[in-house]
Amino acid sequence: MKRRPTRELLDDDLGTPAEIAESLADLRWFNRWFGGLSTTRTLFETAAHVTGQNKFTVLEVASGDGYLMQTIANDLADNGIQLDVMLLDRAASHLPRNGGMPKVTADALSLPFRDGSFDLVVSSLFLHHLAPGQAVQFAREALRVCGTAVLVHDLIRHPLHLALAYAGVPLYHSRITRNDAPASVWQAYTVDEVAGFFRLAGAADVRVQEQYLYRMGVMARKPQ
Image (cartoon, rainbow, N blue to C red; front, side):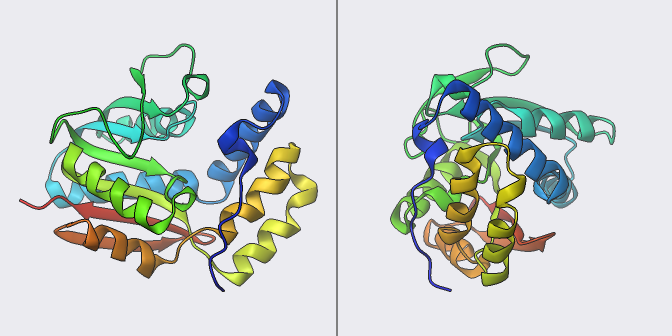
């Protein structure tokens, strides 16, 4: 199945506030029941095991409203892993209006932080929005800003995954999601493609795990 770049409506806020809110609610539903939370949680647990650390400073890139990281941080705290998270998104309107996590508006391809500012740089369902050259650029920036590793959760491009995305269309609350769910699969990458982006960007080691329902978890270590 060849990758086909496809416009996603949520990327450009092409909807009413109610439609956007419904689409974000769909995303929370996807992440809870179809592998997003479990894949991201596993990535942090792997990072803790590999490094021997139980406390991390974290930058989440393309965070949206911060629901995913807030949920993960609460879950991991119960298991003795502490996350100190900053949220980053290109649009201030995507970020939460309130909440305990600091937040910043910035470009993911030109992160406004010094080298090694955070232990971990994390992204969820973001990489597939980027063209290959941009994906490598993001990988370089994320590796620069992290002190330990970059953690990426994303979709895996596969014909059966695309069929499932179309089959779920009647269940989605928002017309935005009805467009964006299949579009996301069309322009998602394979495991080998994502690993290749981080190797081109200079990662010292790239570990990729295939997870539940065509999700991937990637841990790319920063060169020492």
